[in-house]
Amino acid sequence: MNNQKIAKIGENLACKYLIQKNYSIIGRNVKYREGEIDIIAQKAKQLVFIEVKVRTSLAWGYPEEALTVQKKKNFLKAINRYLLTSGYMGNYSADLIAIDLIKNQAKIRHYKSIELED
Image (tube, rainbow, N blue to C red; front, top):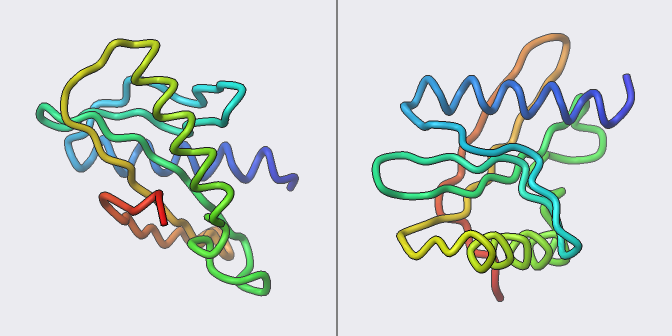
């Protein structure tokens, strides 16, 4: 299975998880020159920008480790671009959903309000 298919499966699992947790999905794969936002969701009156990382093997480390400093910077730039172009002025946060997808078993970890700046 190629990386794009794995990422798509991971994003679908993340959306199902979020819906079960009473989030509304309002956008997926929002792309800007600065970066991409995997999922934009809303819970209560807060907008949540979500980065999804998936691993099918832990040989390369945990999915959380794939959110490098540079990827965090690009994620933040994409969030700022969304906020600027949409005119959204309310509360928001950035989350990470890490998924181990090993032998058709998914283990999902949701990190809320992650730090994107050093």
